[in-house]
Image (cartoon, rainbow, N blue to C red):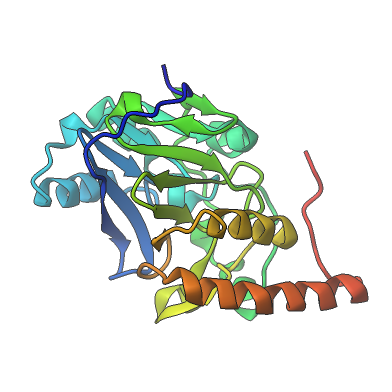
Length: 258
């Protein structure tokens, strides 16, 4: 049963980035163990594109054991309903983001992290409604994925949104959604940065540091290529100082709880 604790190791999990938009602007990730699992569903209308990319890896999309959605922004869950319909794979997502999933809309307004976020918040495509879905597996805590063919677990990492999650494999790969990103949506690869928005920047940093304490080997993210954890740790120190300055000046914006 999903959520049960397992100690038996399974096949090594390979993490394959699946570009959804551009080379790295928006990513999903295909996790290959005994069975394939897809993490994130990209922007709306990209379901068949994702299935074609999966098939190009030699994987039959009909074999997908699970689709994990990392959070309730439409560049990550936009094609979830379509993928579920096309493959029959169950969808796992955290209960704290059920509102966006059931409505097909991200919570508004977005809370920008800086100039990039303020620019992105004005983009029409981030505000359009998408096809809603109901998660087949409603996640509320750490969830083992052994029953879905992976030596991995879903870990709640709130802050970017209340229901943000990451997937940590037994080999140390962290599929982190928007817990961290590459600078300028991946245009500066290898340089850690905030994604354009966080509902709670301090809580997000706490989640990031908690995952870094588990010594991940790589951080596979939704925007840009995989990041080196040591570079992310150094960035986290600078981010802590930045947030402290904002908190002291009363300028740190946080979304109120629903």
